[in-house]
Image 1: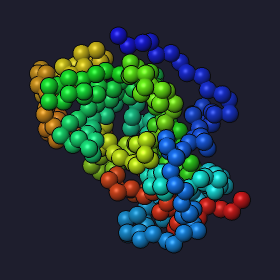
Image 2: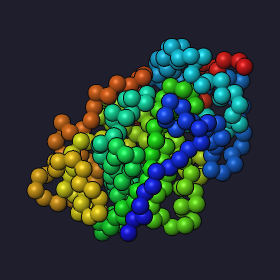
Image 3: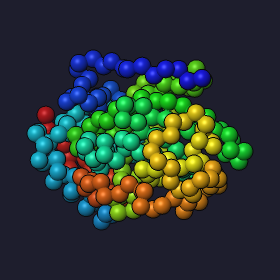
Image 4: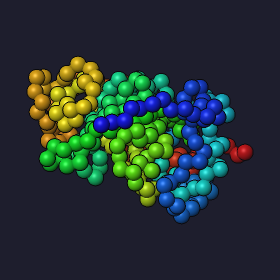
Amino acid sequence: MLAKVTALAFPAAAIAGGILAFSDGERSPVPLPETDAPWTAPGPAVGPEQSASARDLARYLRTLPAGGSQGRVRRLEWTTFWQDRPIGNLHQPALRKLLRGHWFVHYTETAQAEWQFKYFDRDGTIWVCHPTDFARQRFQLHRYRYRIADDLVGAATYVSVRAESDWPDAVNARRREWVTRPIVFDPVTGTLVVHHAEPTGRWYRHTGHMQREYHPAFSTLCPGIPRFGRAGGTAGTAAVPRTYEGFRESIDRSQIVRNVQTLFRQDPRDPLTMGVYFALYPPPAP
């Protein structure tokens, strides 16, 4: 049985406009070798798409007071964790519109044949149906809390999550902390990528889409998950698609959430990173 999720309190210093603020103290879960700050190292090879993304982001940041939060990056202990950290391309109102009241169906890059799903409730709860043995259709249901927060650059938007479930104690010890995850969205295809960091500092992707409708397979895999939204997909059946692509083919494409405005162009699978951006556009001197 899932424990009741209670409201979480934050110190006043952690709140910015009612939204959980990005923490200066965030770092890789394990120590990593330090690197040169991007603006002091030789410039990286940058393709035309990332150059265009960086230019659009720089243009947006010039509209923010003092260029957003860029000054804080000069205080970072630069490691590959920060160098490779993707930059999201949504602002807070857009991410709220994209996530709240919708289902995120996705796969991970390490298990593309498997898929899982999450529901982002409007009350700050994420309901997660996670496979433990995909071949046998064994899944577990968990709950988390989430907040929407500005990232360290001060432009893109992240989701902060915290475990509120029955994960084993060894895992829960790490997951009780809030973690920021860059989110990159393509409004044309509806592709959404949530970037996660491994304990080693390596970034990996959850790739999928947001949809409005509840699929009958959801309750087959996780019977305790709430039935948010009207049923879609293959109506009247609980057939479980075997792959993510099979799932996407089973739904009405009009239910995929698209056309949410982004701050700048960004390739979800090859996003602009902090290392590349600040090599091209150094943060202002203190």
